[in-house]
Image (cartoon, rainbow, N blue to C red; front, top):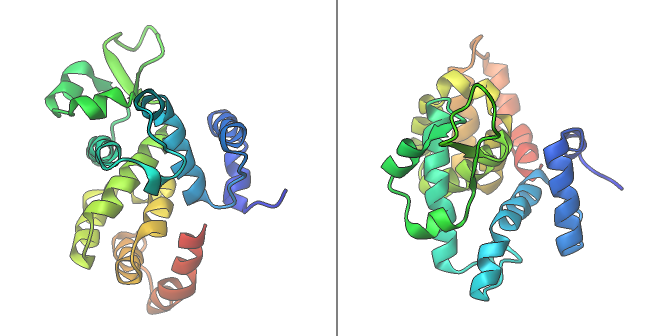
Length: 213
């Protein structure tokens, strides 16, 4: 089975490995790109809701508009929590975000595993990378101009190097103009500061390869 290095690295993570296998059992597809794999994983998460209403969710474009909007609504919450460097949320915080009934029904947020250090009323996404993937879906839909991209990168500046999955998945869905703005903005906030050669190297082939992955 051929796979990119990023896909191979995902196979070393039990959560991602199990969900990749579940996606294959469910659809018969082995995804060779990170973006298509995570899209399939999100659809897998909401499949029970789609099935209960008799609607297809075999791919992103087949989703009902209401379901797609509900996923993006959860993505808005996921992104807000990434900006705050948060992966665990209290029930009051979730309710305070005013998620619609449709968004709550997707059950993309799950109760935290019981532990002495976690309150029973806390919730989280089933995996950090899934939070990043859902946030990236929302960011790609919301960031329609290069200025939007620059604003997003600066909002996530302290975590730029820690959200690899988010940036890869966002890059895969951006227009070429916004994609170029993304890499330049990341380079601007990077430490140490990039040289002129870094800009030239990153702006074309590197970014296109990133999106293809």
